[in-house]
Image 1 (cartoon, rainbow, N blue to C red):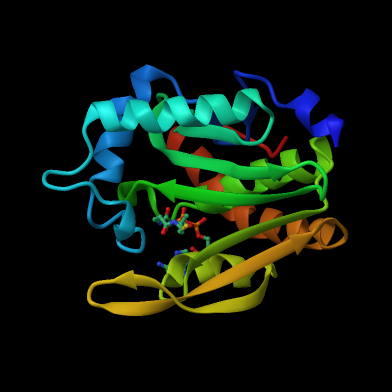
Image 2 (cartoon, helix red, strand yellow):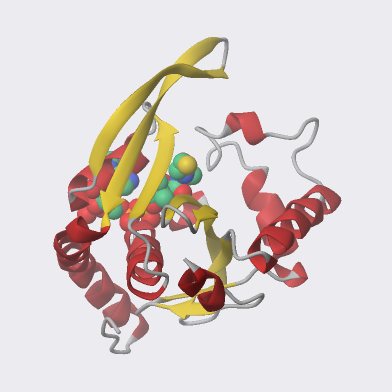
Length: 220
Ligand SMILES: CC(C)(COP(=O)(O)OP(=O)(O)OC[C@H]1O[C@@H](n2cnc3c(N)ncnc32)[C@H](O)[C@@H]1OP(=O)(O)O)[C@@H](O)C(=O)NCCC(=O)NCCS
């Protein structure tokens, strides 16, 4: 899938009605550090915790240096997420962590900082990235894995009709016990129906944001 490689640039920018997704830059690191060190945001990703005292800026920079190398090879695409209006505010990050060109598949991951939850930003990130994945990169399959206990993530996928494909039993140790992980997957032929459901769910949220900001926005 050389097509995919040619579409993944070292610096990229994707836009939705309310969000700007762009390749992470050093000026994002403090926001990223704060988000990754936040126990509410990272409730289901505690295995990523750095202790004591959370993530340092150096650790964030190391994480991004690894991402940069993967993106240069066309094997991943990483984004910082910003709310465009009224000012560009850091909301979180999302990524295609592994892009497999042979099998035209990728794994998607997302972390949004908790003050921004339940505004439809999770949906909008999926809409933007899955559109890029299926319609620009030509992927055949996108999947995502999360703790079975992560109600927000599981409900989002269920709400738009992305199927849970399997359960990895007790594959994550956290808080003194093993937890199951749920794998959700979407195929290119299922994407149009899921996209329509995402758009339908997003529309009232976009209108609400626009009326709050006194501006009009429409899905691109
Ligand atoms: C999972 C996550 C991305 C959801 O983002 P979000 O912006 O809050 O989600 P949205 O506002 O787009 O929600 C879309 C739909 O998902 C479902 N949903 C989202 N959060 C939910 C929750 N806490 N409980 C139940 N359903 C929820 C709802 O159906 C919601 O639609 P509604 O608000 O109209 O009811 C966000 O909670 C997050 O980043 N969590 C921390 C990191 C994480 O756990 N990442 C995934 C693990 S890899």
